[in-house]
Length: 318
Image (cartoon, rainbow, N blue to C red):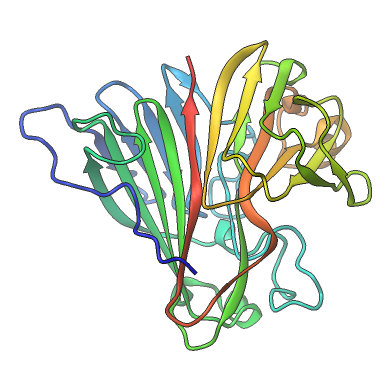
């Protein structure tokens, strides 16, 4: 594995300039960061789930009106963190005793602190970025999760808010003596005005597994992916690093993968949305689309002491 430095790097803020504001809620359940220019991000410590990201006065993420924000179950919406398995675990794998999508999204993370940065992917110089770090370690897991996946690990999840975008990076470290395998994915729910007018671009020619069609494998032949019914596709080994969301012919978001090769496109559509108790409003599928970066086609393996880092930069377009 490549040992990658955690980015963007933090330096001391410039004196005399307006600084980003970071607040921890009174009940210690969430952290909110706001830039002097008005952009904001809110992260729930349960699951380290980003539940709001606003830029230009616009909410970019979709969050169900019935999402559980009390730690009773994984959050429906925002950006849940999927680790160490994507979907239902295979019966023959070391993750077989875990719940679908693993334990990261259903564990309480530790808030490690903030830093401001004049460098990094989202910075334009000056104190225009703030990075929030969250940690999850073996000792923090429930006893059931420890028994189901008995490996020593450390996760650091960095959420960086910039004027023009949001960066979310997951660093995985094997802190034990035994090697382990994992998958990871950032299950981003994006808010749109009308999903029937949305196109997802940057996937032409890419092989995908269609979970709606009995996990058959296809090659994307269209210039853009459009949502016309239930959609659950895992695009694999994508050669280019950017997938774009275009709405009503206008660029809306660029999603740039960092050290990740796969992307899932998901929308539950009418019937599945109706069947999910925490999905509200029931016609909310018309106002959301999931474009989820990850490493899920195969398994990443970490030997003792090794690290892996992967994530995304989401750029909000005018």
